[in-house]
Length: 405
Image (cartoon, rainbow, N blue to C red; front, side, top):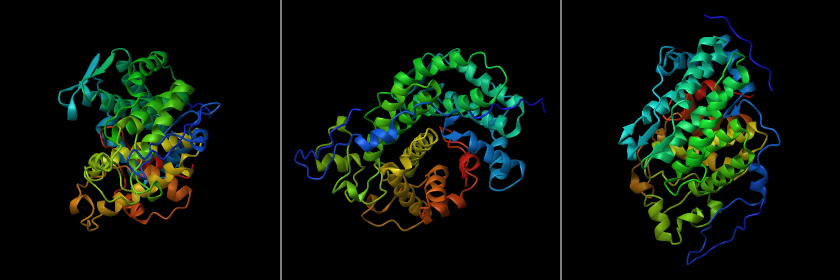
């Protein structure tokens, strides 16, 4: 081991909500109301590190790992065995990352996502071990990309930017605010996030819900790192609107809420957008009948944004965001564990593969707030330690598993 450094100390408008019938009783075009505006507003001063994981959470995890306690030690060992923690990893930056549908073509798409996850992995490894080699590797990866990348192109550019842009600020927050060694190019990295990533994602998209949710996750994290209150507020507003249109609650009425720009103004249009599903129950998502994998992307981003908001002093878990997240986790977890699929749901058949996405929401809603979440608990405990989906989710048993901080 190299010599260790000491970590630094811790440091509206009201939008009218109307029942727009447009020949469609019960369908709402959603936007943030007064209560939402308070919950999503940027803090007077940002907390750092403060993107998905806080310093208190890191300290709790580090103590557990040092004590050899489970599941944290097993999760740490899993992370350290992964290719993302390899100190010999060579970054593969590109000036232009071109990603078509389903990453075809894939010109730098996998390289960018995995280098971003590797930067976050090495930042976590630095914090857990205090071995400066990992901090320097995280910096090497971030510096390599900030020196080169200029654009994302082709049809998947917004989603690709969201995926990579969700991991970069998590890594950067840990390094900038806990590592006392030199990061000479941190300003250039910030410029990269502001000029290359944020413009691609901040205005959202009209694609399937997991796209915009991941894009807003990235925009919120980038805004925290940049301390950009205007972008934070804009991203949070879009996030609230999309979350309400992604996860159904019975209180929404006969039909799910919709995103205003999508013009889903008939029942047939909504059913088609919800993958042909015409029966709506608590926790069903807009992509449940597509497959659980894409649904897991959306659920994960909802949890990540809620957790970042909590660290920044708000409480989205106490709003309908938390209620939607709780039901979405429970509904999908039930079938992920093998429950019989009724005929009214997705024609009696679902495509499983939720992924390692339950830890953050489960910890917040069950462990902190005391909600009974039997299905989610069973799935979470059965699949520990959760690894990475190789896109933008990584090591959440380590960072959030039963973490009270």
